[in-house]
Length: 314
Image 1 (cartoon, rainbow, N blue to C red):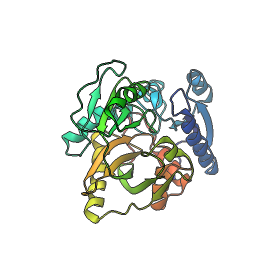
Image 2: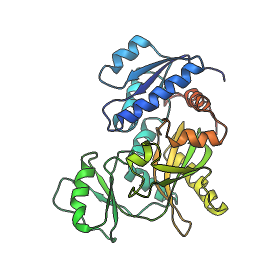
Image 3: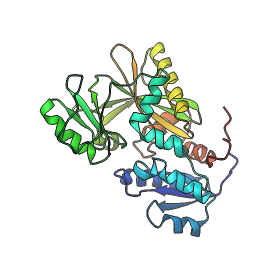
Image 4: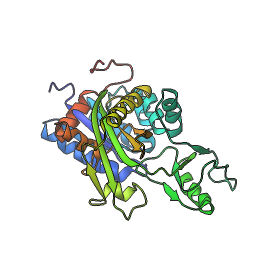
């Protein structure tokens, strides 16, 4: 592969609740780049990052940040100001992808199915909005990942505590019906569909929890996800349309449910998906013939600023 960049700052960590996962992704990316003879430098995405980047003078930044300011457009805007090309989506795409409610509004407008959603605007208040569907509920932060702050609520009287917990991680909280469906996650790389994988959580877990995602043996992965052709086609269509409507770039992962009747219901798009040993995008990409270093190098090759044209014309 033609190397557009040689010295690469791999940004990771920060103050997000997902910082430790981010550091695992970052360490894996550094090793992959070193194996391809790049000059890869790990950089903590903290208060000293600006000075570190000025000292390093990288050709590009590889974003292994997850959640918080590392994924919501803030870091992307900072790198735009510094004139440093970076991997992943731009400022607007990152902000839209991090906001579940705003992305769902856009999804619904283009015919992508989403769960019924109630927005709680003041999660610390004693006043709970009317919920027009019966329990069980899924309660989650509006802008957080890795299932952090997410609770399955079986009884209405437990709803206030779950909302308060989710409100610790986001200024808005979402309440959805608990949908019994298959957990399917799909990937896009530079606008090209990679495929889908099914996650079967350990029966002891109430849903696809943080432990299910990051502890070895807490879930089973099925690739390619076993789906009837019409369902598989809908999954691909929904994934690419969601990627396009949010204006994403690089690699992204869509979280969805396939309901018993075959309907595909989209939960969210992840604009900086994990790149750890148990992460799904590397597993999906491997099923398409990408080794982990291949995947990392391809992501890096698309690094750019918002003002620059994509090196991958659609």
